[in-house]
Length: 282
Image (tube, helix red, strand yellow):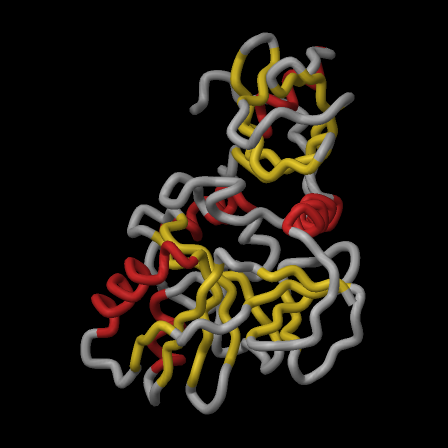
């Protein structure tokens, strides 16, 4: 077993008779169909359809849900959810400090919750609370996410600046296209039906170690994306797929700073760079 302590994460619990209905009507993912023992990616979107808060949500106890999220986002998330709660019978509270870990190369047990984001490579789990220690570092976790094409807010995109489609939430249960209305749903639905997503998370490989997170990806000195998580010569990047497609078609090298890179879309998505580009769109 490899486990990595995620000290930058914290938990919020939303529980009560109306908790499931409240969440189904507000957040992006489907909670009615959320099974016990599964942590599902979800988001609270802005009314304009951009990701304001990203989290993993799982069931805990009767009528209870745990939200695993960036520790710095706990208070503003609780404030926003309190605004949406109105008269719903649901309590919103930060959970007392509880260890959060990502674990893999292990057999499932009652202490582990399957992380639904990881659709390629080894099964990955969340563990909330104490457990056996196993060697693992944040660099190990970064490499795991890069190989699986799993983006996270903060490292790979900035809150309120990306649509769910940009960061692959349309393909890993992060948004539900079937459950009906939720905050920002009209924009998400329009992007889905019109196929207008122009940005996607890509996996990049450099000919030598990549520069730091936030470095621009360019083609002919024109920005085509930005590096997110980096581990050695591999990383994730949020890219304009039309501009990358044009660079590939024209044989123009992609650069991350001074490092030449190749870019591919995660194989589990079934996506590829478009055959034609849409010059002039932004």
